[in-house]
Length: 415
Image (cartoon, rainbow, N blue to C red; front, side):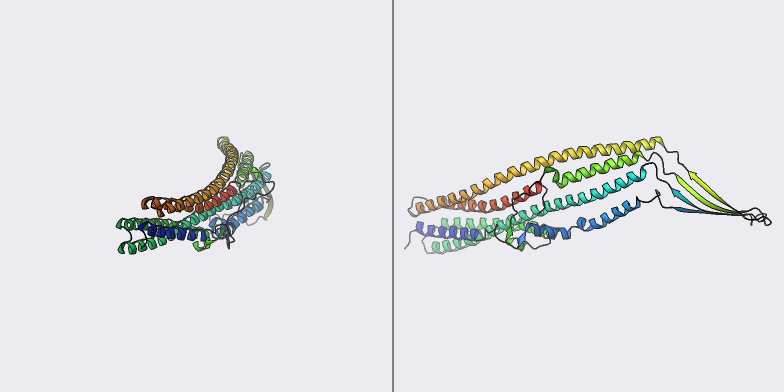
């Protein structure tokens, strides 16, 4: 008959080897895959409502730009009037007037309106780039968070399976009198803990899976194999190339054009009229025709004009401050992301070394247990440490991949 120490040692060795084999067999995070971050991003682009509506918004701005090319500040209007004394003394008075009224641009208003419309179109394009970058950030974070949660489930499932097999085997040996009842209690506690960990992992994965499917439109099963992003950076990339900076600069340009336009709008647009009048004073009179040229010049309101000027200037100052703030933020985030990338690269290496050392330590204690020098609780503790170290080693690969994506995001690069 085998000794109790040797029986338990054999069971624990089976637990450890099975769990590690399952873990490392499923640790293909950076192998060839059918899914890339770029494919996930393109799928999310096709579902995003802002991206879908952007084409129509640009078309609307182009139409406004075309309207600024008109020779008049607003469409022409037709004016007409008819005067008669038919319902009174009926002496034959008839007067018909028909004319056109054209709003005229203020001085420099047309050119500055065109410049403003051009800046609005450019602003919309930069806003589209920034919207894509923000969506890419959400896709990257959701993708790696979901992958990490899925990894937790896989690890928990493997541990639950091996813990159950250990518990059944220990129970059989306790019934045969080879092990003590306390050994079965410890194996049962390990199995109960593994089931609780699996339940928590499944709950977290369920929440993230719903968010992943809603945003990206792909099933979570596509994450079984995914390729991490490359750390290569395009040559000549500058901080000013960041979409957030381009957007802030475009907003400043638009506010400057708006302030320039307001300067020309001290009063409402004057109007020029041209009319033809057909007039007859009595039945015996001959109809006379005349041409009338008229003009209408609003006097304006200095207080209201000053209010609009000050409002435009304040918006311009706010845009300038936002540009400076965005510059500092972009530089700081890129430096922080680069530092995190280096740090997590080292952490990934350290986690692998820790997992290797924990496995070696466990094997030493297992041999000590075989010799009767170590009790079962101590062996279980080091088995737990070895398992946790292997779990952290696998998760560190996902965390490093997430930091690579965060670095690309901080530089303003799309997948």
